[in-house]
Structures are given as C-alpha cells and as structure tokens.
Amino acid sequence: MGVRELEDIVVIECATFVTGPYATALLADLGARVIKIESPPDGDPYRYFAPDPYFSPNFAHLNRNKESVLVDLKTPEGKEICLALVKNADVFVENFRPGTADRLGLGYETVRAVNRRLVYCSISAFGQTGPYAGKPGFDTLGQAMSGLLSVLTDHDDPKLMGIALSE
Image 1 (tube, helix red, strand yellow):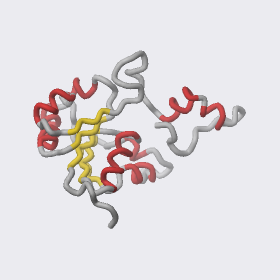
Image 2 (cartoon, rainbow, N blue to C red):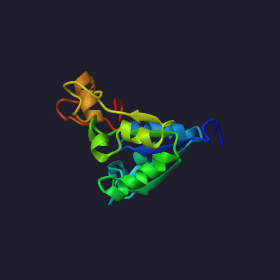
Image 3 (cartoon, one colour):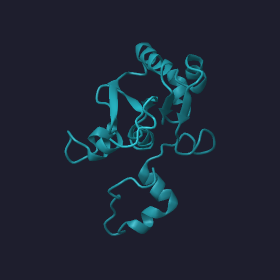
Image 4 (tube, rainbow, N blue to C red):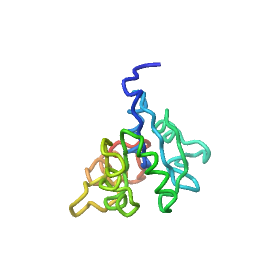
C-alpha cells in the first residue's frame, strides 16, 4: 500500500485544474483523506479536458485517492456544508483567484474562526497582491510569459504542449 504517514490527516480541497489538485493528490498519496468539493452541475472542468468526454486521464491522475462531493459554494447551504467539513479537517486547500474565497465566505479569517488548528493553503498564479494578482494561472499563460512556448512550438503550425508543465 505504500507510505501512509498522513493517514490521520483530513484535507478539504476547493480547487480545480492542476495546482490545488496536484498538491492534494500528493497528500492523498501519503495517506491523507482528501475531500474534493466540486461545483455543480459537472464538477471540476478538468474532468472533460480529453478527447473522450467521459474520461480525462489528467483529471484521474490529479484526483486519485480522493473523495468528491458536489457543493454549490455560492449558496448559503453550500457554504454551510463546506464549513462543517472544515470544522473537523486539518488542512484546507483552495486555488481561487485572490478575493474569491473571501467573497464566498471561505477566506482565511472565516475558516480560521471555525477551526483554529487548520492549515490554510491558498494557491494563486501571481500571489495575493500586485499587478497580476487577479489574472488566471493556466499552463499556456505560464509557458508564454516564460518564453517556453516560443521554444517548444512550431511557428508555422502552433500547438500547445500535451501536458501541463508550468502550472
């Protein structure tokens, strides 16, 4: 079964695409119980980023060993469900754009008031402040800003890389 150092740890994940799910997949690999909160009606958009609309290898890889629940965090009931899960958790991971967690009522101060021992992990592409703070952080953007995309693409027939490298 492998290494299980984190088997007594509970992680609540409010994250999509790569960064948050990859971080929590590593925690799950080490035995943590990860509960992924997905937005209705279809869940994490990465579920459908594949030629087969019913199976995404990338989603499966990044969300292995997790439990998932559909919760609408934009509703009072959804926020209540999330905070109830947070109350008994050890770690909370979100990768919203800066300010979104606060608008949803799931910012650091609110969550900390529910569970003072919780480790709160907020992942954003460009930090919480600064000129790019509100920008999304997708792999193609990271490749383009770093210059990697110009080196790895054929200018006559441009294509994105097959896997996320910079996210």
